[in-house]
Length: 350
Ligand code: NDP
Image (cartoon, rainbow, N blue to C red; front, side, top):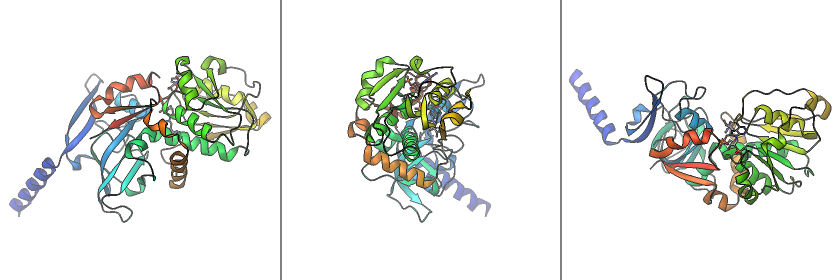
C-alpha cells in the first residue's frame, strides 16, 4: 500500500511538474529587501479554490506596488504571488456557476494579498470571487480598467446617486493622473448630462494637463491651488472623487457646495484625515466611503456596466495604458508609488 501511495504521489508530482506554469513570487531577503522569482510553479503551490483560471492579463495597482516593494499593510505573509486583479479563461471548474471556456474577471477579495494572485499564467480562485467578463471587453481591456478603473466607476456611481440629476458646479478629481483618477475623469465626462459643470482634474503634474483635458477634464488645477487648511472655503465643487486622502480630502470637503458629496477611496497622500465637522453640519456635505475589495456583486456589476458602456474606445488602447510583461512588472512598482506613472499599467502573464 505504501508503495502504491508513493508511486501515486510521484506520478501526481510528475504531472504537476509537467503541467507547470510561470508565476512571479515575491519574497523578503534576510535584510528585508524584495526578492523576485519568476519560476515554473505547480498548481498545488497556489491558494485553493473551486475554479482554475488560465490568466491572460493582470495589472499594476497601488496595492500591487506596495506588495512588490514589501511595504506593510498589503501582504501579511511572503512568499506571495501578487496581482490583485486578473482576467482570463476558466480552465476547469468544480462550481456550477462556471465551466471550462468561460471568460472571467476577478478584482479584490484579498487576491494578491492573502491568496495567490494574478501575476501568474494560472490561478485557483473561489467561484464567488469571479464575474463573467463584461460583453464587449477583452481580457486586456478589463485589466486596463482593473481595480483602479472599477473603483473609479464605483465612486462615479455613488456620486451619481447622491447628487441631483443635473449639477452646475464642476466635480473635482484628485490624483487625476493615476489609475483611479484618470478613469474617474473619463467616466464623469461621459456623464456630462448630470455633471454639467464639467470635471476639474487636480494634479501635482502640470505636464499632464493636455492629456487630462483629452480624457475629458474641463479644467486642470494644481494640488497647491486646492490644498487649504481652512475648515470651510468658497463653494467650488458639487462634489469630488478623492484618491489621495490627507490634506487633499480635507480641502475637497471644505470646497464642496451645500448638499454635495465626496467619494473617498484612496490614500496616495496620507491615510489621515484632519478636518472639522463644519462641511457636514453647516453644508450638509456627505462623505461616501468606497471599497472595491469586498464590494457586493451588484455594485461590481453596476460598475462594470458603466465602464463597458461609457468609456471612449481610445481610453483602453491609447497612451493612458502601458503594457509590461510579467518579468518587468517589479521595475514599475517604485515609480508608481512615487506618483511618476501615468494612467494604468497592464501586465501580460503569458
Ligand atoms: P496611482 O499611483 O496610479 O495614482 C495615485 C495618484 O495620486 C498619482 O498618480 C498622483 O496623481 C497622486 N499622488 C501621488 N502621490 C501624492 C501625494 N503625495 N499627494 C497628493 N497626490 C499624490 O494609484 P491608484 O490610482 O491605483 O490608486 C489611488 C489610491 O486609491 C491609492 O491610495 C490606492 O490604494 C487607492 N485605491 C483604493 C481602492 C479602494 O477599494 N478603496 C481601490 C483602488 C485604489 P497626480 O500626479 O495627478 O497628482
